[in-house]
Image (tube, rainbow, N blue to C red; front, side):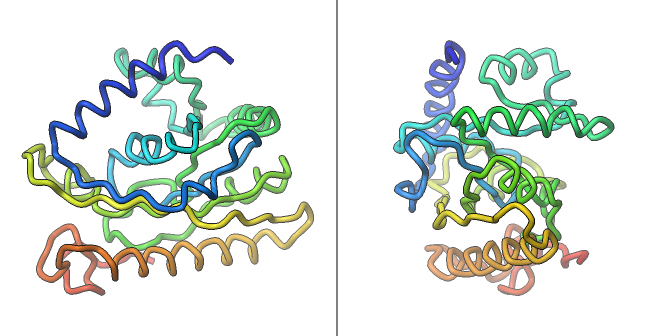
Length: 232
C-alpha cells in the first residue's frame, strides 16, 4: 500500500524527540521480520507509546500499523493522520470488523502493533491481557513479538500532568524473540504465557534502567515508587 502520510509524520515525530532530548535505547530490532507479518504485543505506560514504539521499529525498515480505539479516528486532527498511516480502527461495540481488518493486514505482511492490556497501566505493572493479540497470531499464522517500553510514562501518562521539558529522559524499547502460537492451542494458557514473558522482560528492562525508581511518581510501588498500586 502507498505510504504518503507516514514519512512526513515520522519527520515531525523525530523533531519532537530531538526537542525533548530523549535518550533512546532501542534493542532487539533484529527480531522484527523484514518482510512478513507479525504482531508487536506492547505494554502500555503512556500516551506516547504508539509513536515511540513506531520509531524504534524504523531501523528494521518497517512501518507499524497500530490498532487504536475509534475515538482517536473520530478526532478532526488525528483521524485523517491515522487513516493515512493505515492504522486500524477498533470499535469495541463491533470488534469483528477490526479483527478482520487486522487479520487481512497481517496476512499481507504488515506489522501490527497491539497493546493487549487495553488501556494505560496506571500502576506501570503488566495488567491482565485481552485475547486479541494471541487470537490474531493464531488466525494469521504470524509470530507475536513481546515488546516492552519504559520511561515514556515520565513524559505523558494517565492522570499526571504532561512533562514537555527538555530533561534528557531515558526511554527504552525492547523487542523480544518471536513466539508462535499454533491455531487450536489453549487460548488462556497462551495469554498467560505471553503475560509472563512481558512481566519478565519489563523487570529486566527496569533493572538496567539508568535512573533510580525510588520515590518517583512514574515508578511502581514494587520498585519503591509512588505510582498507584496495581488493581489486579
